Image 1 (cartoon, helix red, strand yellow):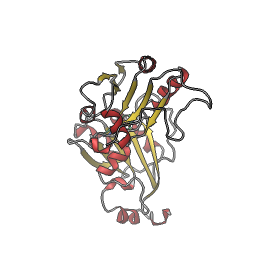
Image 2 (image 1 turned 90 degrees about the vertical axis):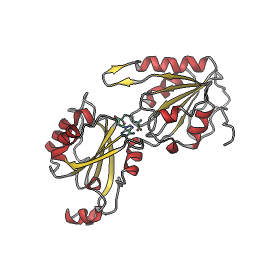
Image 3 (image 1 turned 45 degrees about the vertical axis):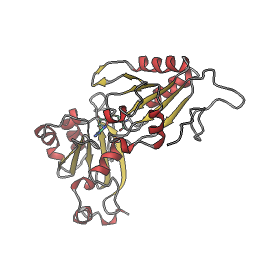
Image 4 (image 1 turned 180 degrees about the vertical axis):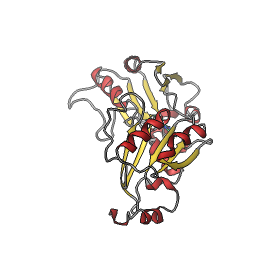
Amino acid sequence: MGTMNLAPPTAPGNARPAPGKVWPTPGKVWLVGAGPGDPDLLTLRAARLLMQAEVVVHDGLVDPRVLAMAPPSARLVSVAKRRSRHTMAQEAINDLLVAEARAGRQVIRLKGGDPFVFGRGGEELEACLAAQVPCEVVPGVSAALGAAAAAQIPLTHRAAASAVTFVAGQCRGLAEQDWTGLAGPGRTLVIYMGLNNAGAIAAKLAADGLAGDTPVAVIENACRPEMRTLRGDLAGLAALVHDSGVTGPALIVIGAVAAGHDIGALASELSLENVF
Ligand code: SAH
């Protein structure tokens, strides 16, 4: 691999100063997606940045194998969050990124999956830009994409699903969220952060009219050696999560595609041939 160009961003659409202006600081924040686990799923750009990093500010979800790619000289700063117990408040993380960049450093802000999918990347980008700190975003394989690929669950399928939706299933605000129409025939719903709330999620979807026998898959620790895929149906979701002792990061996939390999047969059984 060649040397990474740490000069101002060249990727179209990434933040840059107005024409004729220069950024006031030589430092920079890179919001980098670390993917779902397996280092092979990093983008080349993420891998190059990581291998040259001087400071890496990372979440708890970032796989240790990915962190191990940083050089021994790199300073690793964990800002791991736990559910309802933030080790470091978002504002403090924003301040840290800005301060490190203002000190002239190239700051690799490493986030599980993709920085802009349930990762607060938007808030960190805004904080950098408000402080006139240059920031570039490097996409990552989001957990839904990595998990679906690893579990061989096609999120869309001509015979079974023409739409896919990602939602956050954590407790706060769940009741207020309107999920009507997001799950059902011809659709796939992927729920991030839904594990601790599986029963309430199943009840919410059932109340919206989703059939109790709608296929469900729970994918735990996707793209890691300890990955597990559990299958069941909506009515049994809470029991499935509980009885299987799912504790690692996990996604819930709801819809015909979650049933297993013979999606086409299932779809015709459910009269879904004419979805397209
Ligand atoms: N930015 C991340 C998501 C952060 S939210 C991304 O794009 O993937 C954290 C949630 O992501 C977890 O609660 C879990 O639902 C999901 N997740 C992250 N890594 C995962 C993995 N390896 N396997 C299964 N789910 C994962």
